[in-house]
Image 1 (cartoon, rainbow, N blue to C red):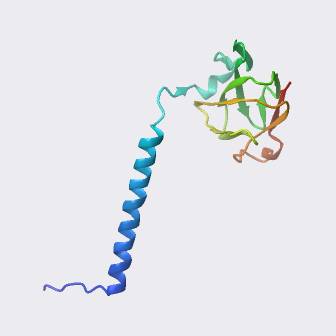
Image 2 (image 1 turned 90 degrees about the vertical axis):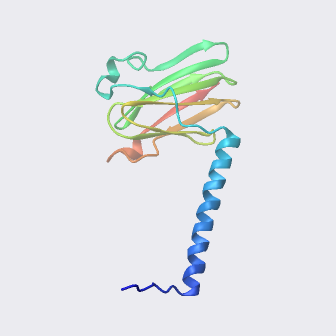
Image 3 (image 1 turned 45 degrees about the vertical axis):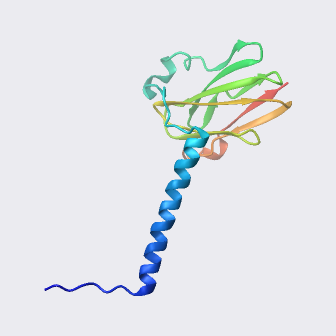
Amino acid sequence: MNESIHMHRAEKLWLRFGFLMLAIFLATITTASIIDGISPPSRVQTIDPTKVAQTPPFDHPGVRKISPGHYEVYYVAQIFSFNPQSISIPVGSHVTFYITSSDVEHGFYIPATGVNTMVTPGWVSSVSHTFTKTGKFLIVCHEYCGAGHQFMAGSIEVQ
């Protein structure tokens, strides 16, 4: 039995359209990744989530001055708080945040700054920002982490 499957003309058109859109999508992503220099993460830091409290520098989270105007801040996200709760830095400072979690998935978001990252147990997330305005910046967890999630917040005072 040699039966051929008959496709309606409209079905063939939609099938071709779908493949064309897929090809355009893949070409766009490939081109953008080459132009923007996007590459998979390398030198990703890991940490044993059961030993965060004993692993330097997360055993003493907080602000570290690297050089004039450059700081590193180490945060530990845990149900339902950030440690440290609040920090102060001078205006104009370039800050690199290193954040890890000792329990569940969290988020680390500072509105109006572009600082936004996921915080996954076993990994160290990092993100940088230069604070050019004085004021108090709120840090919020944007990933649901349990019944007290809405209370998980911290702050940065830029002076």
